[in-house]
Image (tube, rainbow, N blue to C red):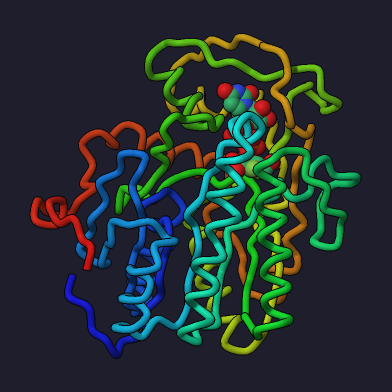
Length: 345
Ligand code: UFG
């Protein structure tokens, strides 16, 4: 895609990933020029016709200089980073490097070019084990894993940058992103996959067991409760956050539905939607799993005007299943030409 140097542009780091690609697509449809900066280290080949894709690290100073010099970048949405909670505890050095240290390159380049809007992918992991449910943004943040620590640390950096340098930012604390945009085939392709819904669908499809991590939690059926949010609703929240920054300076918002779904309820939904059976094996608890994480998203509802539309567990699982069935033949590149393009600048 040829870029127009005057058109309002949003830089989307990690835009070849699951949530980033869904958001990038929405932004392109809202009339923004979208530049995706992604190192595609996890094997994606994502070169859609509706965005310019730069195959590079989000902290690459030379690329950022070129981008910020030549294009009218008005905001940065930062999705790039590591997400596996389990790995974060075993390899904190890499997690702090990728999720925290490298962000200074990006934020300082933004300062240099006077780009002052930043939207950050934070996480419910900042709360740790919550004292009450549903969780509001005012509740204490005590992350219980390294991943959560990195997200909370970046929130603090953003607050300091805002205070000292006038950075405008929104941190969006996602609860459990799930589902897919099956029209555009934008869904989950994590490698390795650790998330419950794609693993359950794979177990159902392949006739393999699904392992439940603990059924002795203090919940009605003994399994963990999470707040699953459709990725299409998540994308809309980012667009609303961008609009919010036209008027406001900072904001931190929970993104969830307020509805909790247990792992056993997920299993039942997957069986219903796929019509397949799933063999369940109960294992011990996974480290760092709180028994319940359910959002109070009143603030996002009222201030951003964000109301989830697709986040019913049946819709989420049906869309994730639609994506799962077609993902190997999906158009991850709109054309060979786009796929072959390995953009630098
Ligand atoms: N689960 C299983 N078996 C599996 C995978 C998951 O029982 O094979 C359970 C988990 O223990 C958890 C629930 O299913 O209770 C959901 O697990 P996910 O791995 O899908 O999601 P998490 O709640 O662990 O993680 C999500 C985000 C993280 C974020 C975290 C906040 O994916 O990025 O919420 O706590 F950090």
